[in-house]
Image 1 (cartoon, rainbow, N blue to C red):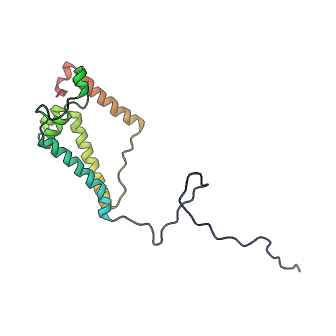
Image 2 (spheres, one colour):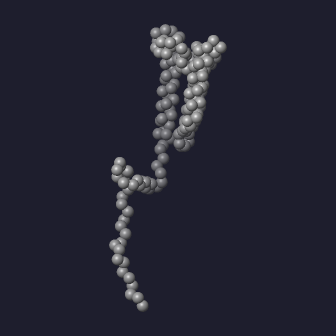
Image 3 (cartoon, rainbow, N blue to C red):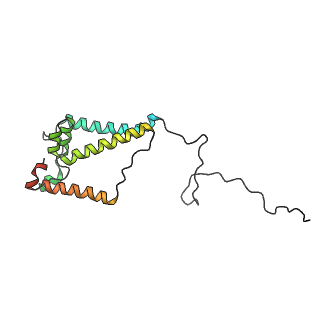
Length: 173
């Protein structure tokens, strides 16, 4: 019979404590989960960002609704329009926001239809963000691919070009 072998290697060590990764500190390790599972933020804390964002936008619309951009001297003139006489995609945006704040959708569309589409897209995104925050879901991501961003840029450029020609005068403010 063979004699029992004694281990020649030292006993295994306890794992090293895990710390956040510092630049140049070696391979990354994940932090252990806190005892009792992941910590969830309270509903009030989750709602802070979307509610403050909506409050800021509401304050901006309230200001533009109170201070009429149709009266000269309240807001600066578009620099591109002042220097060249060419309407940019944003020209008429303040008048559009003023009309939109007063509930006059027809006048808002006449001042800047692209801006009204932007207001509605933002409203849908903000509503989705608010509902998801209320339910404890992650915030929605606006992850557009390169082609989608190019499409948005071409749409804005096309809008600007068309509104500067006589046949597109309905799009001019």
